[in-house]
Length: 204
Ligand code: ATP
Image (cartoon, rainbow, N blue to C red; front, side, top):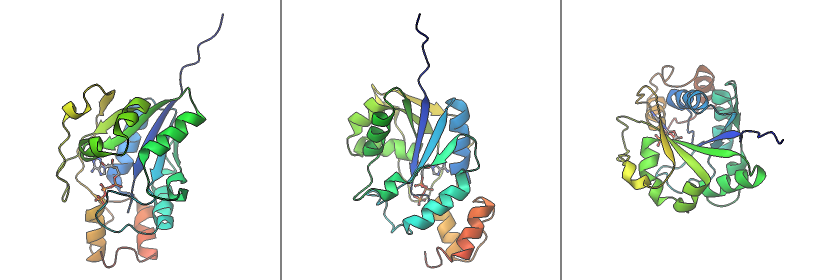
């Protein structure tokens, strides 16, 4: 008799991480636990097609993502979106992961603001076929108007993540750093040190 091996549960969490902050870390921790993930991969984006501001150089964002996430159990930072030429599309990343591991169950993890915008993403319908969408609530984020409406994901496989509401955004961190205000309460210590050492966001 054959033994059924359960599918590996692989989380996918993309972002600009300009910089990574405490809500990203909390979201990653919650996803690993609540989705019982075998692995969660963090993907700093290459050329983000949907971000209004110019992103910091990818090598800085990658370095900060490694500092913020790599100590967490089951979490790996993957630089493929930064290495890939052209605009970053999550669809491409999901497809590559599925091709490499056809048995894996993919979970695409995001905040509610991103979930609201998901129907506009490149190859949205195919994304829904490839992954279960896992959504963490997001409150009071300056500059984001998106309200997640579950009806937009009708027919999709999706689930909510339980996460205490954290209003921090990367925009707020950049603005505070530019104004020489403290950011120690918003980002991991190692990230705060990196920002200071590399003089990031001084003119945000
Ligand atoms: P910015 O302020 O520059 O737009 P951001 O804080 O939204 O950046 P991103 O790197 O764009 O950070 O976010 C990556 C992912 O993390 C997205 O899915 C986003 O919805 C989610 N996220 C970011 N901040 C929060 C938060 N406070 N609560 C829940 N999800 C969040």
